[in-house]
Length: 159
Picture 1 (cartoon, rainbow, N blue to C red):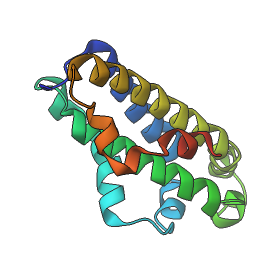
Picture 2 (cartoon, rainbow, N blue to C red):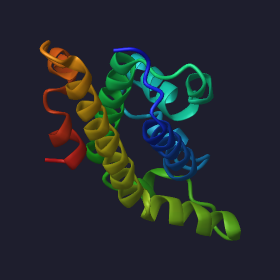
Picture 3 (cartoon, rainbow, N blue to C red):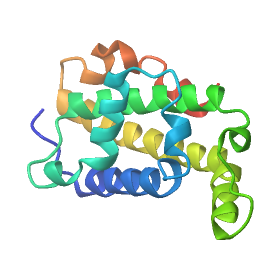
């Protein structure tokens, strides 16, 4: 398959990045997230998906790279769900002022925002699988050849 230049895919990747930066990887949450037991390669793939989209918008995305970025992001979601049960306790809450309220809001909404992130990833995965099936013809679609994707829906759903 050539590079993916589908407008729906590009918009969804941009939306995933915006949501991640605004609600998950905030200045209040990032120090806690970096304490999670996640390989550097996973972090690198999550960063490529969520922060480096401008370099792909013009040239398009490689399907195998998007699949790997989704798999890494799903791994991040799984580890974050299990590794941050009480986020409020890990965030250094300021005693008073507007910073305290913002930090508490970030911590309180983290699980819900993580689920929105997972849902967006799942939507992107479903779109890519459809494109992959359509373009593969008689050969097996690419997603069937990437072991990290075998349980992707379960990772994203949290089951």
